[in-house]
Length: 131
Ligand code: THU
Image (cartoon, rainbow, N blue to C red; front, side):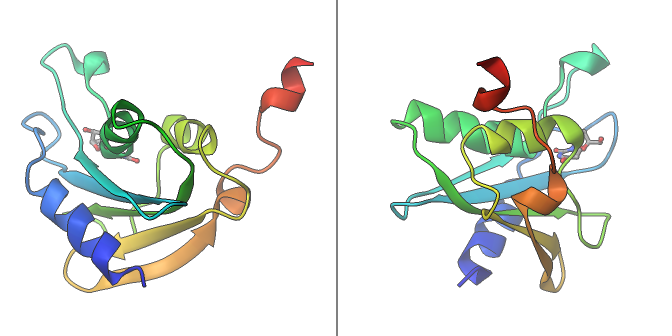
């Protein structure tokens, strides 16, 4: 079930450091072997140096040994169904497949929509592009 991921993402969202955008975001991912990692956005007064919630969650996964992402939930305090930004789509894709489920959530209500990575990042630049 994705409810646990939503709850972890919302918990992470509450830790966001977003004083400039006032747009707290949380993300939680489940690896294919069942581990969960969460993250929030972390902004900087030098605006381009901030980063997204999905990126924090991926960093936790990598630091704990890495893995592949089976599903990921994203939630923003001020948006129903927050969809990952373009950069995060590419970062998620690094550890995902076209079938990886992305749960777009509403902070009050939970999962609003589930989409596949293949829908979010069609014709992705991937390892086959390098050969
Ligand atoms: N943000 C995320 O954390 N994830 C996304 O996928 C979209 C945007 C953050 C970045 C910034 O701190 C704030 O939302 C406003 O753009």
